[in-house]
Image (cartoon, rainbow, N blue to C red; front, side, top):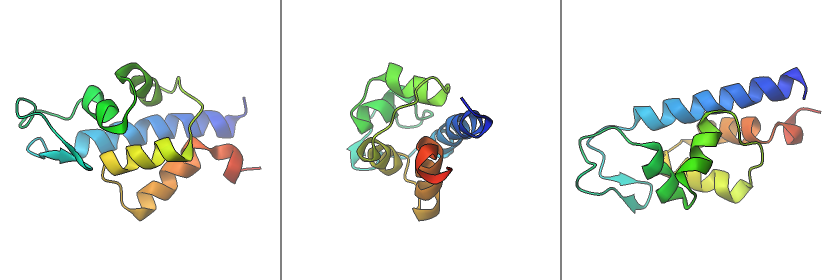
Length: 104
């Protein structure tokens, strides 16, 4: 694996962690997904992001830890919705998750 891909994996993991942790503890929704009342006031967990995106917590945790390498654009769009990314952040997410499409 080339240095570009390894760097992209590291940056993707960091981006996902930063975006998840910046969501306010009192946020009541993640995209169109309503948080459980017991979770409001607490940090957004990997499990919540995963559930809202329709994947397992283990799968999402692998994304945040640089162990997951295959992503569909549809999944990335769902995660972007859940993390409430703006247009420029979505573009960065796509570039980092699928570097083979952007860096040749």
